[in-house]
Amino acid sequence: MRVETERLVVDPLQASDKEDYFTNISHDKTVLETFVCRYAETLDDFDFAPYLTRDDIFAIRHKTTGKLIGIFVECEKDEANHSLEIGYGIGRAYWNQGYMTEAVNAALQYYFDKTDYRTVYASFFPENVASKRVMEKCGMTFSHVCEKEFTYLGRERDLIYYKITVSQT
Image (tube, rainbow, N blue to C red; front, side):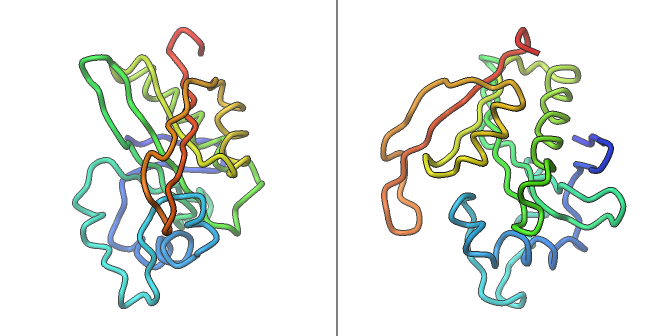
C-alpha cells in the first residue's frame, strides 16, 4: 500500500525508519498504553529487522519531512469474507492534530477502491477514547466487544471493535 494525503504518506517501512519508530512508538510507554508493541529501552536494544520483512506494517510519514510519525498495521486478513482488521499507532508529539484520522481515511479509501476488502475492522482499549474518535470520524460504527481478549502490560484487556463496510463510504 502507498497512499498520500495533504500532509501524509503511508508506505512500506524502510531501514532508515528505525530511529523514528523507536522514538515515536517502541520507547514511549505512554504510546504503548494504547498500542500493542514491545517496549525497547535503548535504540541498540530495538530489533527493527523483523519489521522490515513484513508486508503488513506501513510507515505513516509526515509529507514535509519524510519522517515516520506513526505506523499502520494490517492485523488480520480474512480474504474468504473480504474483511480486514487494521491497527495504528502514532507518536505522542503528533496526538490531537488529525494525523491519524487522515491516515485511516486514506487507507480505507485505498482498501475499498483498490482491493477486494469490503469490511474493515479496528479495535481499541476501552480507555483509549482518542482511537474511538478516529474510528468514528472515519465512518466506522460499533461492531462488538471481546472481553479479556488477551493479556497486555500484565493485565487482561478488553477490546472494543468498530467496523465499516464499502457500502458505508
